[in-house]
Amino acid sequence: MRVVKRYSWLWVGLLLFLTASIAMLLLTSNQRPSFTTATWIWNAKLISSQTEEIVSFAKDNQINLIYLHIEPTRVSPQAYRAFIKKANEANIKVEALGGDPNWAYTANRQSIGDLVSWVKAYNQMAKVDEQFSGIHVDIEPYLLPDWKKDQEKVVNQWLKNVDYLITETKKDSKLQVSADLPFWIDTVTVPGDSEKVSNWMLQRLDSITLMAYRNHAMGHNGIVDIVEKTVAAANSAKKASVIVGVNILESSEGSNVSFHEEGTHEMKQQLVILQEELAENPAFAGSAIHDYESWKHATQREEQL
Picture (cartoon, rainbow, N blue to C red):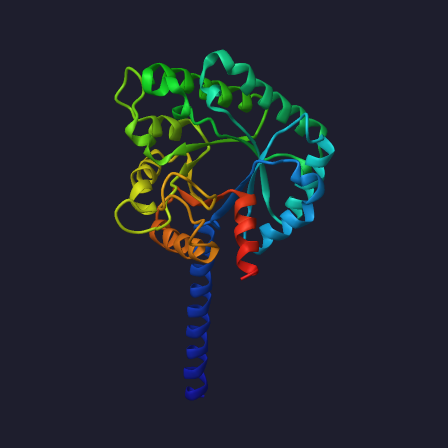
C-alpha cells in the first residue's frame, strides 16, 4: 500500500506540473498576439479580376493586413465587397488606403473628408464581413517643394489635417486610423513646441507604419537601428502600435533602400531578424512590405530562375 500511495503522489505531482506548464503556455500565448504582415495594393483595379490570385498570394506569404487603395471612379463597391469578403475568409483584414502629399495642406482637407465619407457610406451598405476595418493614409508632405522652403508651415497644416482625419473617422465609427510615416519623423518637431512629430502621431493614431526602407536588419543604418527610438517612444506612450515597413520595389534612391536585388528570401530572413530583435517591445506590431505588385513580380522572377 505504501508503494501505491507513493506512486499516486508522483502522478499527482506530475499532473500538477503539466497543468501549470500548460497554463503558462496559454498565458504566454495570450500576452503576445501574432505579428502583422501587411502590404499595400495601389492598383485597386486588380481586385476586380485577380481576387483569388491576391488572396492566394497573401495566404502563401502569411499576409494578414492589406492597405487597399480607394478608387471610387475605377472600382465599384461590389468589387470591394467581394474582395474584402474573400480576404476576411482567409483572416486578412483590409484597410482603406488613400493619400497625396497635397493632403498636408488644409486647403485640400476636403479630399480627406471625401475619403472618410466614402468609407463610412460603403461600410454602412456592406455586410460585416465585407467592411473595411480602418483607414490608412499615405500623405508624405516632405515630397512637397514647400517642405524645404517653409517646413514649419507645412508641418503645422499637416498635423491639423491628421487631427481632422481622426476626428471625422471616429465619429460614429469604430474604424482604426493609421498612417505611413518616414523613419526619421522623430527628428521633426511640432511647430512652437519641443515635442517630436513622431510622438504627436503616436498619441493620436491607432497605428503607424514606419517606412524603414533598408535592406538589412542589423548594424549601423539598418532597419532596427533607424526605428528603435520610435518603437521605444511608442512603448512609453502606450497608445499606437508600430508596424515597420520595408521595400521590394525597384528604387533609384540607392542600393540599400530596397530588397529588389536581394530578393524575397533574403527579405524574409531579414524580417525574421527584425522580429526577433523587436519582439520584446509591446508596441511593435509587425512588418509591411511595399508593395504587393512588386513583391509578386519578384516572386515570379525567382520562380523562373
